[in-house]
Length: 205
Image (cartoon, rainbow, N blue to C red; front, top):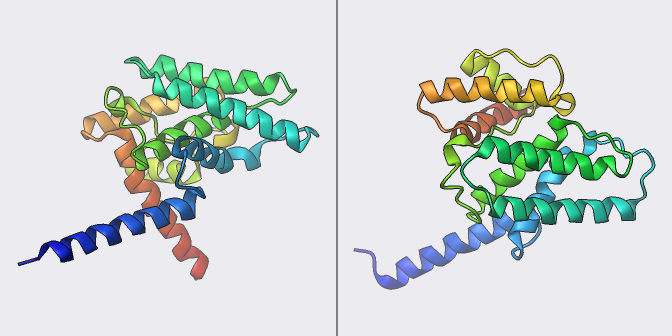
């Protein structure tokens, strides 16, 4: 029989481990919504051509987008497809005002990874739209979708996808996963990790 002291100790250890992982990956234990959006930005920003935009303006632009994106996420209704187009359009327009041509592929990465991280951090459950969430598209997902779902890759890299290419790709993924009774984000968690692990094994050879 496990006594209450042992149970409390185990609970404390588990909580400390979770805090450690959160801090290691997101750099903070406070304002995790902002941290999720910042981490999502970091996942895609290396593909942006800033055209000489100064660092201070870049930072303010990122903060502005993050604030509005988080607000939009907190107000997701039932039609996720319309919401997603609006969220990506918001990001693209914000950057256009500063002379930066952000693609739909780049915007989706920011949006989808923010959603993924918020779900991981238990900051948002997305209960009403969970089965409609998009798979964050990157090279690992291209490989997994092709191998596991039999869906061919788009003609362009993920960072150069336009709206039509992206939406057609997501539709194909969603339809196939529905047949298999998989929620897209649950499938992504499993298969992205699998591809990442395979990639790491390849690096060690």
